[in-house]
Image (cartoon, rainbow, N blue to C red; front, side):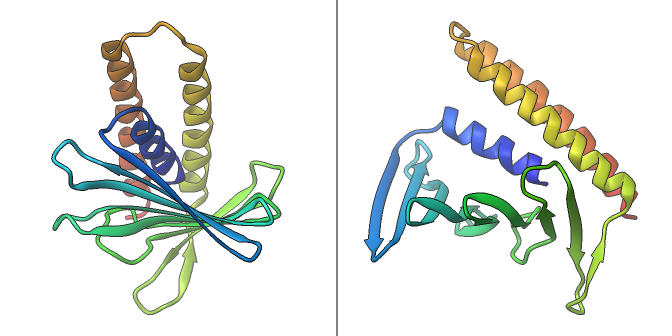
Length: 179
């Protein structure tokens, strides 16, 4: 799911209508809010990033739910600027469905799914490996896209659609693994 969130962030940064960034500073804590609206003026995405002494410590991504209300769908926790944990709400219905723990400086991670009774269960090894594969695929894609300088909007759109399809196919495979 981290990969899908990265894809969403990338897509949102490339396309959309109005963007607004605001900054709030309280002591050594700085909060920056980036908001993007759709062409109809409704909220499309909100990213709130919190810094301590200039280092990122928390990032929260909100998107509209089925009723159009912004809800938190992704949260990243960082220590000394290094990502150590993230939570995601895969379906946007509220409540985090995945908890990811990262070992800074490596691609090592563990993924857990919270259960209705409040416990958490680790995902299967296959699910974990597919998630790592998605992450590597997205990193390569983003690096390749940013290196291109003369691509048309249509070429960008086509490329993003192909990547989105690959991610969706992997998500289906991961979902089948959890059944």
